[in-house]
Length: 235
Ligand SMILES: [Zn+2]
Image (tube, rainbow, N blue to C red; front, side):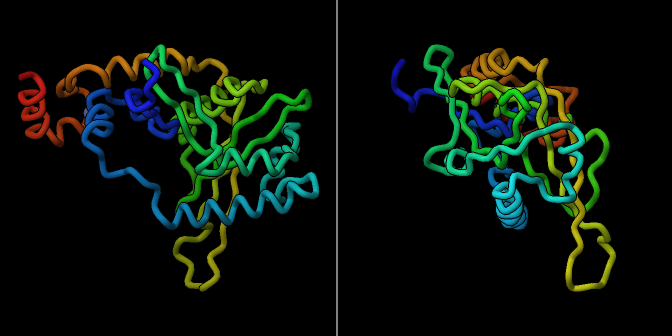
């Protein structure tokens, strides 16, 4: 199978959903869900953050709110041209695997380095409130997928990654200037087997609708639609 159109296109940001419910993932992929694009506000903040990190990058530094990175002995990735390609729509990272039937592709926000040159994937997360402690579990697979793509492109990768949270410090404030705070979150990704996960995803996507998952709140919410789907995909 050499034709790319027959390959399932898998995005790093949707991997957590697959771990939560295969039925919902199937629906989202085949019928299109509601969360296709990130909100415009987040996209705008992401591009501001890229500029901010790049400004410091040129001096070999991190922004002061990310001082934790220095304490963690993380190094600045200086090759802005390469990073710009990885962030772009044309030259972003991807893994095409015709044998297993998928294309994994996604644009990365940022990348840092270990002292020995191994790459550390990083993603900006902006929101209106401070991150909950367990928030990193939602993004582990996304970050591991970036690491997998780097590895596939021939780069050595670290077993850690970073989430750079930015949130409004005082959501109830009345000042026009909105104060943002940054929070650096280390995420361990070394134990995630992305290749196996991608094979599992293809297996589900290739099959008919798996049916309602009784343990999933979303599935139960859309119960009637799921029953209808099951009927329609079975015949
Ligand atoms: Zn579900």
